[in-house]
Amino acid sequence: MELNDKLQQLRKQKGFTQEELAEKLYVSRTAISKWESGRGYPSIDSLKAISKLFGISIDELLSSEELMSIAETEQNEKTNRMRDLIYGALDCMVAMMFVLPFFGERKTEEEMIRSVSLLELSYLQDYMRITYMATIVCIVLIGILEIASQKIHNRIWEQHRVMISLGFTLFGVALFMASLQPYVGFFLLCILAVKGILAIKQR
Image 1 (cartoon, rainbow, N blue to C red):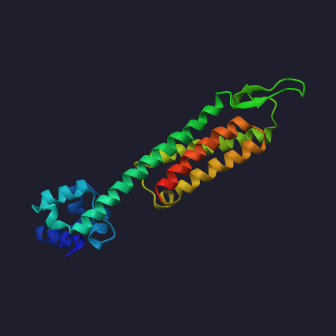
Image 2: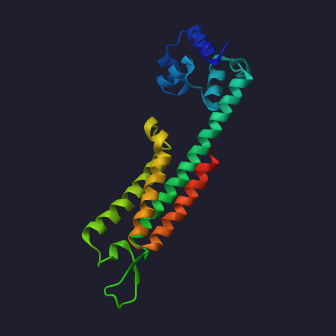
Image 3: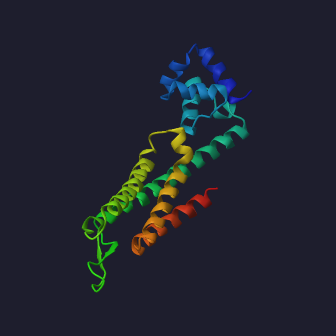
């Protein structure tokens, strides 16, 4: 008998509804529904709670294949969370461009190029300033979402967050290189390289 059938049988033997079982295990009713329909597995901590609640060993609940699958799923989730934290931290670092002298500027052709922050850029057309700021703000917001998504789960975001993060960083590299801001472009290129290496390693 598979875990989903065993769990459903144990719950009914105790006379619990899915809501009551969810309350006792400190999980959502949706989680119980997924477990009982075979669309998902409990975490190791939830398995321990189930084992304690029903007075049954984890070995009796699971086959060795199911236990391996759960352990592998948990490991993948931990790896993904760590990757998201690194991606988020890297994207949030881009906010430094507002105050650190990453940008090159000169008033006249004869004057030497000086390094300034984005907020100090004065000889720049308005549409370019807005484009620069919008790009940096978007990258930083994605970083905040990557960190916040450790607690908030959204299927669409979880499926596409890596490509969104890589895509915006790649756009930033192309934008700043094309507009002759090599320091900013190189900084973003380094961030993109780290993200790419992490993404490749996790495939």
